[in-house]
Image 1 (cartoon, rainbow, N blue to C red):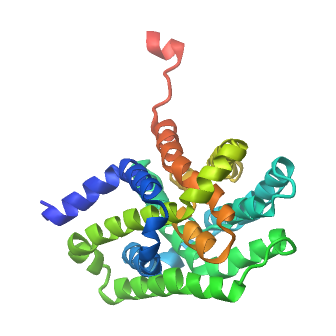
Image 2: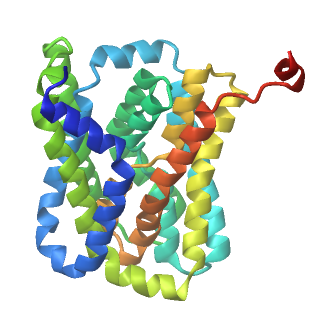
Image 3: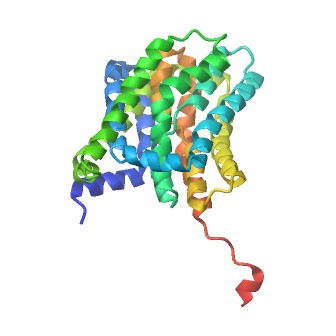
Length: 322
């Protein structure tokens, strides 16, 4: 029987969508009064990344690299395809509103969200592929995110790239390397032995990060929603497009069912928590709005995708009669 701490952690993860929505509501109600907690966000995010990385080893990464097509599809093609779509759509709908356009490009450039691994497991996908893709994408994020922003928004935005890269390294790369190394040194046993102690703080850190960042963006978001209701529609469509392109690319390349499911979730779920941290810390506040709205849509759409991908096919008429 699992320890009580681990059982509670698994239960909270299975109800993640409700806690995320509640955290967003608390942040919206708290508003800018939560600004005093902003300095703790990078530390909490680093801890969350560390706990997640403990589930993966350097050896796991090596195994996936031996058959790299699914990994290339998930990490490389998505980062080529989604920023193009985001740039075209946001420039068409919001011409001249560079802060918003920057937010949509940032949303498309973000690394794979940690919850993609959880949804891949719930959907009976290839969890090892999901973990590896999320880890590799995370480790590469200090290169990928600034590069995409520079290519698609370099002329319209003034960004402190050095500061942003340092933030990504501190919040994502260093904790990931530490987690991977501890996993190998413990021969994969550290996570299972200690998740009862590490899991709950990680879950509550995620909720606090969401609450604080939503609070910091609340004022600008309220003003922006009243002026541009198209933001919600475009963000929902962009989020849905991520899931659809992940599924279609997997079908085009003929991936097995497990890899197809994983590709769908990894393409659709972006690390919006780190996106909010970056947007609020380094960009105009308006740039955080698309990332904030995407956070509201990702988990419900993931739940719909999970239902569609795992639903048994309808029996043929002849088979039903037989």
